Amino acid sequence: MRNIDACRTISDTVATSLGPYGRNKIVINHLQKMILTSDAATILRELEVVHPAAKLLVMASQQQEAEMGDATNMVIVLAGELLKKAEELLRMGLKTSDIVVGYERAGQEALRVLEELEVDRVKDMRDQEELSKALRTVIAAKQSGHEDVLANLVAEAVLAVLPKNTFNFNVDNVRVVKIMGGSIEQSRVVKGMVFGREPEGTVKNVQKAKVGVFSCPIDIAQTETKGTVLLKNAQEMLDFTKGEESQIDQAIKELHDSGVRVVVAGNSVGELPMHYLNRYGILVIKIMSKFELRRLCRVVGATPLARLGAPMPDEMGAVDIVETIEIGGDRVTVFRQENDTTRTATLVLRGATQNHLEDVERAVDDGVNVVKAITRDARLVPGAGAAEMQLVERISAFADKTSGLSQYAIRKYAEAFEVVPRLLAESAGLDATEILASLYTAHSDKSSKDNSVCGAGVDIENNNGDGVLDAQEEGILDLMVTKQWAIKLATESARTVLSVDQIIVARQAGGPKPPGPNPNWDED
Image (cartoon, rainbow, N blue to C red):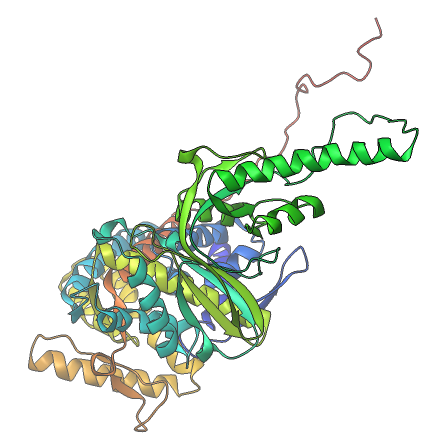
């Protein structure tokens, strides 16, 4: 029971942030960093969960994040609800073994039923309309009100980097750059890589150039040891600095002669080399992040060099256009390829506060991950809690056919799915009991007439007053594969928690101490 309580506490924490009108949480982590989000995976990552049974739920949601990148909240909420129902069953006097068996059977049935709920699919991945249809719902759950803008942007960015074989789509190729100021509507997609700073020198724009990438500081060679030089007169001093100058001049001239016109520095650039680089008309940009440097190397096809000097032909990269453009008062540098060989797209997000931008970025990440999931399975089921209501109907019907005590468990399992439409209605401020009743009526009417999928879901905007809409008509569609994973993981973690009866924490028992480092080792 205690285990169930611990898990319920977790699921109650994140339950309020399900759906488009879900509430945000401000999490202040151990480093005192403030995170504002409604993304369950992020919330749970920052909460330090100690209770072992609750940790199981958190692990299930992390697994969902790793697999699909979306519906993490659903896993937790559903698992919490399954455990709540299990508690009722235990109070009725069922044994845990009956419940676990019942849940297992019901879980298999749920996955089978889900297969039948397909109402639409993404027919052509290359069609922006089609793609944004699947993305809208995912993004609406995080950023309600901006879903159309963001879904189109993500679809545009993804299509810019989709390879011929869609299966090979790499999530890393869509980058996000956050620039403060403006509003979300001003966000846009730039083909290529965008860096939030301008080049260091006087050269700002270059076309069709070779690129050298250096991970070392571009500066006068510093000697290892400190040496003292005794200079007797002014001439010697001039000669001494001349030697340094000519050395740098030589190095940069070599660069220029080898055809490099863009230098990317992963470290500092000194004053003197800067002067020579400007003189030879070479564009210099500093990129401090190692990951970004790596990505850029992928885009231009260069090898990062650890010392200053002319790169070999195969270590040089090539870029079609490097330009400095202004986005909302901030000057940024864009690396762009005209042809299709290296494809990276950058979403330039605009917004008023840093926290808001980070949250939009999470919504975009979810959107991109969903595209990855679509490449595996493009089937869509009705959203807005309609698919869940169908599951309630069909699993309850399955329970009626089952003999023995496990039918009670299956029936409760079916009831657990109510939680999704209920939470959606509650977070939108509607009367959940009424809406659930109307949904039940709509679904049973439909299923009694014919066997088609009923798309009646929760209308959070409550346009016509009864709080019910047809999810399919409204274009609220969820990916089937994310639902499958969510149900799978939620059932699995609920069963695991139920089958635990004791948590034993290993303490150090008595007995001889293991040999450790002896502080008095030198005494005989």
